[in-house]
Length: 538
Image (cartoon, rainbow, N blue to C red; front, side, top):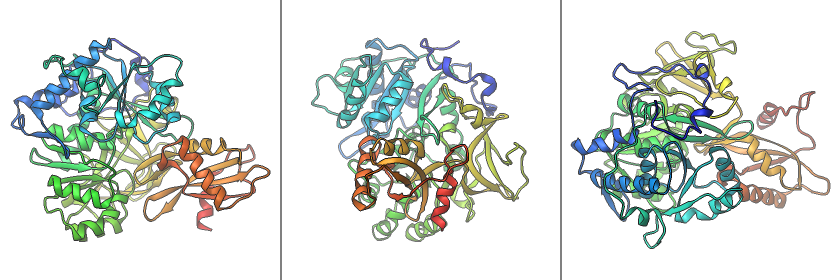
């Protein structure tokens, strides 16, 4: 039994025996039981103590939970009046904004499947997402129309596009919703119905698509936030992670709603100075960002304190202890570190500030289990380094992807992280076990950067790896063999970097390019990326 009549995603999920083992709390709903995520988070808020408290704020407007309920209902009605049916996919493209948040909530409340995309993605990347997700509608911030228009024009079939975020527009989501009913009953989805598709860069081949159900996301709202974050309806949340990234979606939208907290969306490009100003203006109590940004903000916040701040959450990349200590010195706050994965939606290893232990990420979040395994899949004793394996109320379900078999092994999610768990249950992060590049909190797959470089006539061969960097954790480093007639030099490096930026999100471009006469390969011709990484230490 399901509330979603369009079975496109359901039919492309891995078989049940390829799913990880799911562990639910005794009071949790089950997959086959009625559950609509937005009914739980927003509709039920009308009976809560925070019904008339602020949900969303930006420099120009303030919206309460009760007002947001009406606006989401009108947007959901508008989409269904366009002929959409539950289970249809809706691609969302926007910056962190009230408009984006309302659109996402409306999509999921209507039983549609949200496919949020990073605002920096280029047309080529968006085209790949459209080809995989096959959305029936695109909702796009008016400021980001150019690349999505190019991507849509590349598709064989027409794809309706509705803009949002411009009060002067005529045929936009706001105007189409204005005269719709303020009442809308949440689609009668069940826990196993898919709420969202999260695209994540892979280390090989095309992007992977993690499918998360209403139950998955609701379970995440009741795991780390309840047991570690301990936020309340009095909190005001500010941060930098995009809502299209599950770290940002949870921290800056869904988790605050679960407890009646308020979210402040800062406008314009965020740098350390503007971020601290936004935190001050909002009277921020909880901040979410990556270690790189905390490191950059340290000197600013030391001289311009945010006295309301009580929790600083770091995730997205490894947190250096030097960053933790400098932030603590500047603010007096112990940072809350965490490790999560798009495949498991959010953080599954973390400790509250009072339980932090230097040199570790934290302990396993209640509701999850974790161990480290050797290559044979055997659990290792405390103190030994192995592959981090996790199971709990969320887990990996890739859409139409053979890589499910390597991510889920014997019911465990193999996260791609190397770690050690000590005798007290604290997890010590070691490194990535795959070729994923994590730079300033962004996941970057080396092969897509290689493809972009190889499309330039100067590049005959190339290999891309992550290079350690004190500011960003890692940066993209490319090793290139040039085509005949091209000479290495600063001018060519600049041309290649600009070429990559023209087809991929700017954060993916290679900040370091090294020219080689040949690339290290196995006798069968397989690129040996580990040897390229070794060149950084020689």
